[in-house]
Length: 370
Image (cartoon, rainbow, N blue to C red):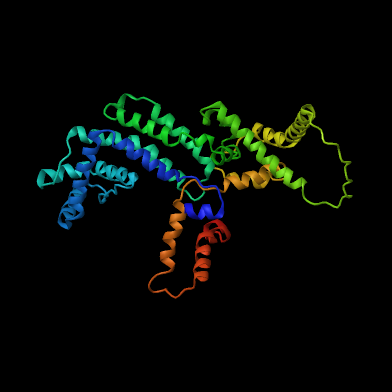
């Protein structure tokens, strides 16, 4: 995917979901007690995964306790959220597992401290799982990164009386998040996308931890709008031919060159302040949109009021913040092209995948059309 972006000469950024995976991995490995609890939980889940008889006995216990019949989930070490789901499934079946351990043997047992530690670990990792689901949504864009990371750091920095036993993990997670996302506010793709998202524009001071980054983002946005307007003004028009300016004699005067530079800067500043700056400041001063709304709908309705700014917003808001949707598309190819349909041409496969991905944008579900 990185090679494809480089060949297309398109700005490439890292996958936010993968960066979160690295941060959580560092945080989980910061405390030996968490590692031991996860290892014990894996042994318990593995016991039921490899023994149909053990699972049958566990289901009987669940029925006797009038619990929902659910299976324990095995984690994959390269995906931290699977470890969270494993902890949650074991915690949900704590009563059933306790009864099972009293009648049958298990390869390992959890102590009271480990049960408490698992509950706290699952609570600490819950915001990461929520953030991962949000950024993995097909509609998530680069505009969601800075606000989400700011909210995550605020959650991790809050101290609770129930943090005993996981305080080290929380501090290490916070440090890992700050390290991994240290430059996110300085990257124009993220910062400009955050500003042109109408859901976040009036929370700039809260989302940008440094005032200098906010000023830089606003200046970059104004420059992007100015580029759009400059390109529009340079389109060929049916105007009279430009008259040839008289040739000036060569001069070595430094003062004349300085005057020329100052005049160019004043003209550029005047054009930006009278057009691009007005659009940006007017847009930022207006009321924000609800957090659940679609920012592209806002720009579709307000494109006539902010034409150049809408063009910039459309370009930056179309950038995804993860590679999850691309990987889902790769997986969808295996459902179209398999051993029983191996004679499809590449063009036909491409058309089928395109329809599978975009058909919902054209055809509405029956429940919505009624």
